[in-house]
Image (cartoon, rainbow, N blue to C red; front, side, top):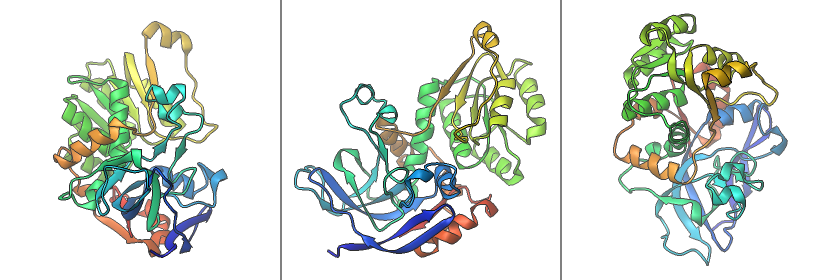
Length: 342
């Protein structure tokens, strides 16, 4: 096997270089994955524009990927060359307090593929074999590449303990907002209220299961009308805008929950009335990525067709055109997901 591969290196914010780099060699407990395709995540867009993880550039981004095992380290057992897999992109130390509690994202030594170490906008990636998840052979790669983003949504629902009959407002009808809507519909949430500035994405949210889809200037009225003036039990912010977080608190009922999901800038803040939060027994919980069992659950939902995937599989670019894929991303709001095909 050749010792080189093609990869897209983000040399600096806004600038990819596609070319030959050293192919990673799997360590004793690692597997080398030949990547089929990798989705572009909102986090990748933040990295591309230098708003997140810029200190790790130059780097190969990309973490929403699927592929097949190309090589196995000598200590890896139970896997076969050519087997189709998805991968948990979060690498914890496995022994610290947080890893023992399945809170890998808080591990002091955590590494994330495509965020602070090289990722999957490349032909190959070496990963710890313990993070491999077997994927059914009859599931197309464009569907499998949705496992990681769906796992993030699964974890957010799990952490917020949302359940049937509760009302939820989803702020942002982009790819993650759409997945939230679909999962909430599966759970039995009602009503589901979605807001976005883009009319076509509001229509897609309705098609995905939202009961009400309105532009921002109509949100508060719609929420109060749908909840007898209370506000929704939960609000999920999926955009990453501090002003929208403030608006989320305004449409949440007393005793409600704010699921903080959208990634803001490192210095963004909102004002919170502490006494009001105490007296009303409100809560806020952050959630950023799917780990462990979240990945397995997401894969199960996808392979059993619980998620409508067609809105996510219409836009794909070859690796050589990754610069164009990123440069035109904001101009293609109807493409809920863009995937890079190796």
